[in-house]
Amino acid sequence: MEKETSDFTFDVKNKVPQVKTFADSLLYDTDTYVNDESNFEEVDVHIQENLEDDFIKEALKSGMDLRQYSRQIEKELKEVENASIQDLSLYIQESQNIASLHNQITACDEILERMEQMLKLFQSDLGSISNEILTLQQQSVSMNIRLKNRQAIRGELSQFVDDMIVQESLIQHILESAVTDKEFLEDLQILDHKIAFVKEQSFKDAKCCQDVKDVLEKLKTKATSKIREYLLQKIYSFRKPMTNYQVPQNVLLKFKFFYQFLMTHERDIAREVREEYLDTMSKILFSYFKMYTSRLMKLQFEEVADRDDLMGVEDTAKRNILS
Image (tube, helix red, strand yellow):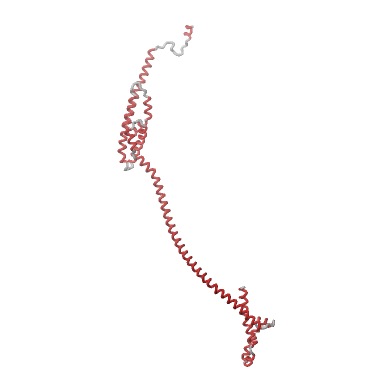
């Protein structure tokens, strides 16, 4: 509708001046032009120019009353002008809303600007947080490596401390327990391991070896003394008459680690025990074989063999006599 109105307004504005000028020139007071020849000529020229217009030609051909048409055009122009004024008044009324909308848009721009600043600040904070996270990640990796290294060395260090330290229970069992007790044998094996371990670490110049070396040496001396006394006592028990030496031998087999301990730490005592055992057993076996041979000889001279005792002789003669 607005487009049609604007097109009509444009057409009317273009044609009305020409129609109105032409009508005025035709209806103008002729007396004025009669008295002034120059004006008449000017009007004539003006009329000729307007007659050449296509729109005016069409109007003349159709027999249209130009004055009436001019008034009609003026009326339409008034209507269009009034409509334009009404539209303008509507635009003026909406100007407050437009101004309010402009203020709202300005406020939104300010809010968006503040939000942009906040987002930039947030982005900066995220960058710093990202750097902190990266630093924490690096620290975590470093701590994890240190933890793995500590866990790896913890087992070896714990084993080293266990091998190096001398427990109170071990000292008590070696000094006070009987040789035949189970605790003594178990702690003797532990003592043997500790002595060998400390000796190995001494070659590596370990300072802590000096703290336990004297204690281990005293425990070794006490253990070898008790073992020597026990083994010699068992060996001497073989010499008793009518003794079944196999029984104490079986007992000694249960404590074979005693001799192994002596061979490792006190070879002189081990040699003494071995020689004592060999001497005792050789005498026992010698006496047994001597008695065995003497009894064999006695059996040999008590009974004289005759032809009946000979092997491979037929006993048919005896059967003939008996028959």
